[in-house]
Length: 249
Image (cartoon, rainbow, N blue to C red; front, top):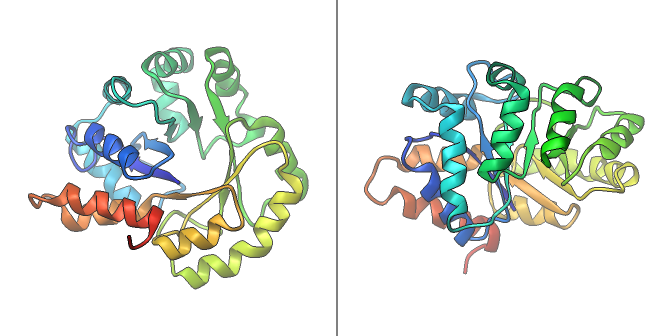
């Protein structure tokens, strides 16, 4: 189970505690979102969390500090997920070096397709960062094979065409079956993780039977939004994560 959380959401001081709590409650990978003002692939939920994080004052340097703090007590893999513009602004070489130095394991940059990713991929490889690319239902077989060749860590399968967001289980199930079979035929070097639309244990279990893992983001952000800033909001969030992974215990 890979969980996406926007760095700096819902406030600057909670991200470390959330990541450590996710680790203790069943998460296997953390995708840490780098907020950006124009997130092309994200639906309203993650756009909202990005806007809140930006207004809270999140910066790339603060994101690296968050990872360093997590690394004091946890070795859970952390993937930075975001868009290329802030990386260009930071400086590609400096970004990759600071990322690996802070304890980041890899990168997902949705607006940088494999054919146009050399400027970041070369520096990432030099630094020792994994590069993870995406495939979708409208990705051709040949392109899936290219993504498999260039990816390291895993291949991110977007279960439905469109932006991020929790969807009905039927919508996810309908589009995922044949798509995953086609991905398995073409992606043979990397594990396959499926994201976009998974919102509960039933969705996750259905996906886990077909792929190597699943990714949850919008449903997690929505859970935080529904309970923050109540006194026990983190308890509700961690219970959601535990239930997502293990069902009703």
